[in-house]
Length: 177
Image (cartoon, rainbow, N blue to C red; front, side):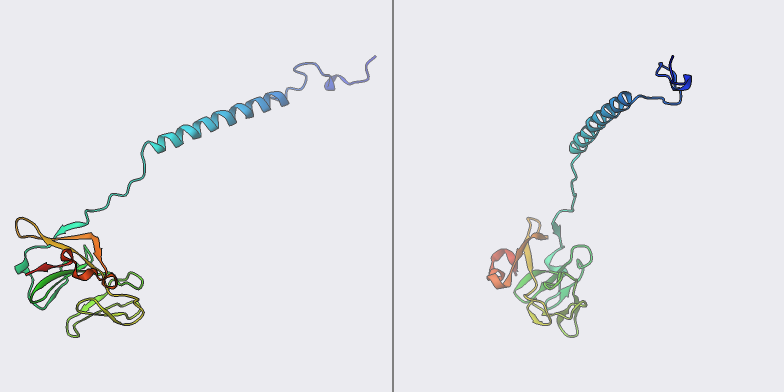
């Protein structure tokens, strides 16, 4: 005679509250893990097919005609959109990048004092862009500038000329008038 009560018998379907056996649970968990990893791999592959691309505007822009600029003045016409000043002297036209060489702030042109002054840390630059006060370690950078076939001024922000490397005398760093 059996001493096991009828409610604890090992017959199939005896315990209806237990939905899965241990074997069924681990089988389901294994397949879920496998299919989940396949799905993640497929999502990664689809993401790879659409790479992240940063679409930037062209570094080359037209800055008008030479006669648009007065001799001895610094034009702030392109300071906001291009971060560039254009200065016309008696014999040449130069493009100065409006980015402080200390921490990258945008300096202000002070026409009455004839200097560029950075509002962040007080760096000062002469009209030509040479640093003379404050923490800026070097002069402002000049940009490539040229005339196209129709006598329009073209400024290329991707080509920079550094004073400390002697590049300010490079023929691409100014337009001779």
